Image 1 (cartoon, one colour):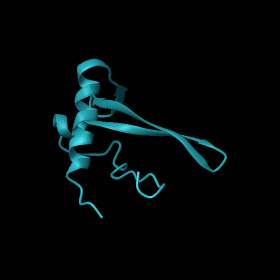
Image 2 (cartoon, one colour):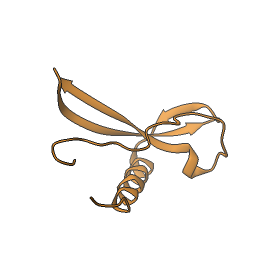
Image 3 (tube, one colour):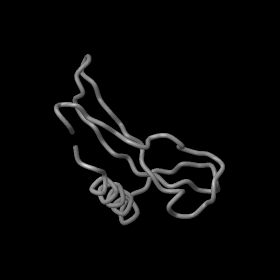
Image 4 (cartoon, one colour):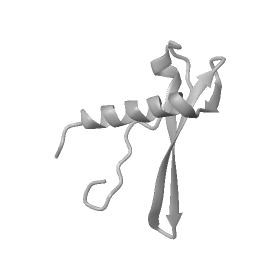
Length: 80
């Protein structure tokens, strides 16, 4: 959150032809709920790509790892 604006980076490339390493097959959907024009909630929904094309929502340890990876990467972003 920056000055009352929510900024989400790198939401593209959900599924595409790529090297299938764990780093390339795990990610998250960003679910945003609006009330009119006002952003009400934001939720990260972690997933893993299985069989090179099928997104599957994950739970437990895998879910925590994906969210942790996102938080760690966010901390490395330059600050204004």
